[in-house]
Image 1: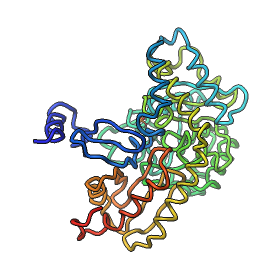
Image 2: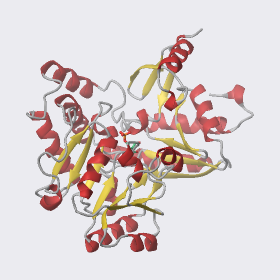
Image 3: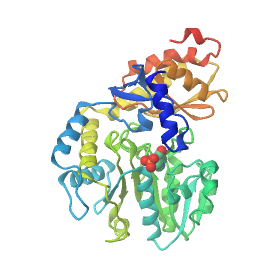
Image 4: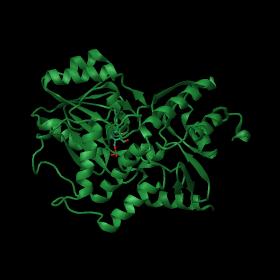
Length: 399
Ligand code: PLP
């Protein structure tokens, strides 16, 4: 029995079965490559689902975490630390948030969304408008905003007062947002729904409607933020200033973290002392890791790099002109390859056997969310392997 098979059996005997049987037992990584416990190497085109923004074992991140761990991993929120304060300042700066804006640091995306829900509740309104196809997390509050019936239905009834409208339908959102709505929550790109990009004009309309009708506009950038799309935040493509932004995933390169950014003094004053809190959120280890990620993105000009490599990837996939590929969509290094039929799971499995980690995000779409440091050459190895991966009869010719 291989080490992988042994550990997978033990996994199934000891871990709660919510994720099914994992695809591999990973051991370590370097750059954009990861190895499993049997020594097989993979090109990581998923990055822990848009988390390992600097790839694996990046020296800047390893140094920042090691040095901070040797100083202080955690302090209670009766106190603060220099990394925590610096991180809040840096986040507000890259967001271009106005004077009087503020940050609440959490341990995950879901927790950032929970903070946003509580922020919205402090407007003295209780209704929230979210989008069909939305994914905002699995805790009972965030789940109420998440749209997928399979995730919601086993746990009904959820938080009341949530209305889902079709993403991009201007009439529907116009009709849904009235003076009883506390907030509209929207992802600039719906990652979990298959990388569905919101039209900038739609985000601008949401901004206009919410401003006019006294509701908050909360943008969930948990998957799209911190350089993933080639801007610090994907809503910056639409040139809107929201009232709240949630961030997590790639922010600390793999160390658990999340954040809610509140824009301006009015919104930032909605949650007052004692109305929210967390034990681990904003601890100096996670904050130091996040600062290293932000520094590296800036120092290595990764926003430009992400934009260019994303465009190049799209161009190469289109140039294949493969009949099994219907479309490639996304921004920067958050892309989906839409297949002509529901074979994404089988193709992802073949890709893994051929040494590529990709995600069948819907039955017909493969999601790519590689480390932001991936090179065009590394991406090209996957594109050249695609025709063989898409051909169900060519198993012996896998690259
Ligand atoms: N919001 C979005 C847009 C996400 O993509 C995710 C996770 O995939 C979440 C919220 C939940 O974040 P987490 O899994 O860190 O709790």
